Length: 487
Image: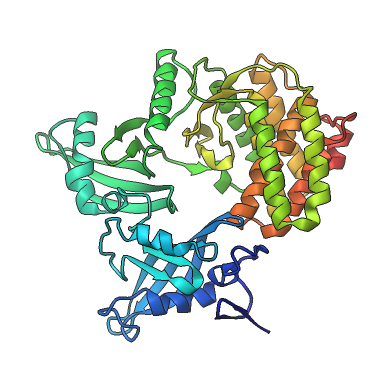
């Protein structure tokens, strides 16, 4: 069967599940890697890079950020072959698709931005029939520092020398470096890993160093850096046990913050079925309890009311894209709204604010917290609930045995309870877990179109309903038959 959307042929299976969105009918095109390979082949190259010379062999979607009814931003990785030299190169491309008729004004605005010439292709292009604007990396609609952050010359001669001199010695120079793109979110942030070889001019001493640099859209980085700096200073002053990455500098001109790299792998990269994984979860719980115990004030405070407002937004977002889910969704959100009124007073702690397995680095059993950009104050059960919701989500994605996921949760919660002075009431914790399953996990499955796709949204909402119970019943977490029944 051949599908059509805005005049483009869609032969074969789609590469990402396509939400039903009347405002963005071209999603069926832009989420089809096969079709987009041909679209890029026709539109990406300038006069000097003819299709006869450069051939796109493969097109892979690496990231999606979708706002139903409004826009969808997609990041693609292209494999490009030069038949004359037989060289293969990779090129990152970001594309933003707009609701019908909204792209012309955005294209006019985009043409006023400064661009650099990419290694392959033209900096920006516009496909009106798809309401699609394309940026070829390192060009980006909001990340102005990206060309410099990803340039070895700029890093070596402009961005890093003062930072290295301040950290080590004015005699310390960069003799060599290599850059890796760690994480790129078009229009929001980009993180690079820079492997440095340093040489001291006075002693000829050679040392290796790994640093990470992250740039944000305008105005989004400095506040986070200052909050992390405050946390690190307190931890050092009080001789705290919390392991944190060492901050180096915030470059206000280019809106880049720098920190020293850590050895090890994220907890997300570890096999959850291995016998030592529960031990790592215990270390994670200990690190989290250390963070929560730090008595600092932050600009942001997360309240129960904020989460209930998010639930209302999730109700609108998810029910619009999954009409068949509306009854279940309304049921669980209505219960959570009622339960929120009786949660009562809770302790206030320093929160990570975006907690999941990717934000813990493990090296020889020691756990370090990373990505502390959303530090805030609030109930510690907010962070715990996020962690448990992520474990449940990963259990569904990996199709893990329910008893194994239950064991992980029990180990994590028991260790956390032993490390802290405040109680972890089952009713309250269940509320935060169910809320995180909807606000964080289900919403992200929809807006990022990954992790099992739209069917996963349905599973997460129904799991949230089980965790929330009803307004008269709660499920205990630790060693309970009810919890086993939930899974």
